[in-house]
Length: 223
Ligand SMILES: *Cc1c(COP(=O)(O)O)cnc(C)c1O
Image: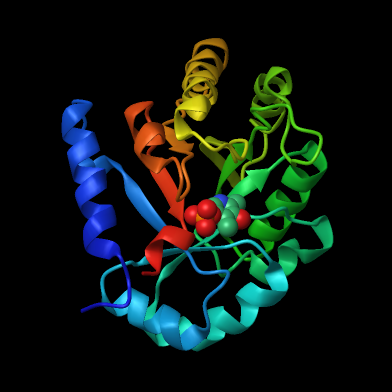
């Protein structure tokens, strides 16, 4: 038996997708590896989880080196300081935590240096929580417009970390609001955003029902 609960997670993703009239191929599982050692991550990739998420630059870098022969697709999902962009720019496929124009400018500059167009998501503080990073929902459209001229950034969508709740149903409204915000940005700007990175171990089923295209799962991965 596998040390990971992948069969279960994939069954849930498929079942919820079908129930919601969606295609499970449109929902990407990002394995969040922040609590795992490199050896375990290698086994996770061998079991088919090829998209991985890390939230701290200093933890990510040694894991990136250790996993190199396996070539997973890395997603940077944590708060990102401007002075650390240069360490990850050529190593990650997507940055989920864009939350200021200053950070966007730095990502754009560093991406240009390595001749790359960096895929990013704007992190939205959807629950308006004091403790969380991300732009407040009313500022997301403005930031999306401001980064339009940046040639080495490609905005693909929005990300949120929903509030911690006992009952995951309580987060449904936040996920609905994320979807509305995505539609608003598409209607009010030249963007054609498609990605919604939302849903974690406790609430990914509800996030998928409300339109998540990427779920970031850590705790629930390990049996
Ligand atoms: C840790 C983390 C996750 C995964 O959380 P779990 O509840 O363990 O699934 C997802 N997103 C971000 C940004 C994280 O830091």
